[in-house]
Length: 175
Image 1 (cartoon, rainbow, N blue to C red):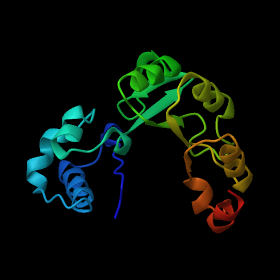
Image 2: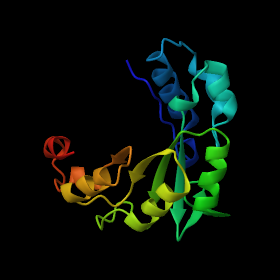
Image 3: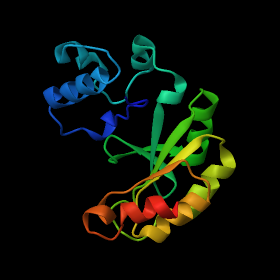
Image 4: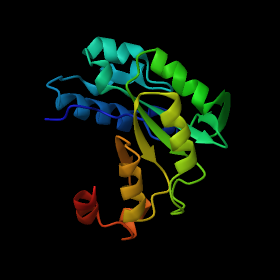
């Protein structure tokens, strides 16, 4: 059984409503919650409201906040809009609200296979005590080992896996 559901409704600007609500309904079923997708349209973001957590009684540990940044500033609406917020200040605000896990994406490295934004990840670690998941830029197993050695909670691997540059079985052994 899953212990966490991750939704990025802010990044689904082009997804059809029916696809989003069906995905949410399927995820909820893994928690034993059965909802008609038509009843979930009020949760379609952006952003995913706190009411979702309260309605379905998810704990703070089961909610992760994604912070998507470019040049150190938080981007929203599918990376299109600049929020005007510094990512470190925003992370501290989220921690003050009770957020336990942050998924940090550096837009400039995402899909670039150039390595994660280690400097920004280190700065984030110094500012908050949240669990941090690195997203964007992983290019090889050595990147995953370095992220693990930094003490990060996790890493999201995309393009490096699809192109064969990361061997996940080896990464699990190495980390």
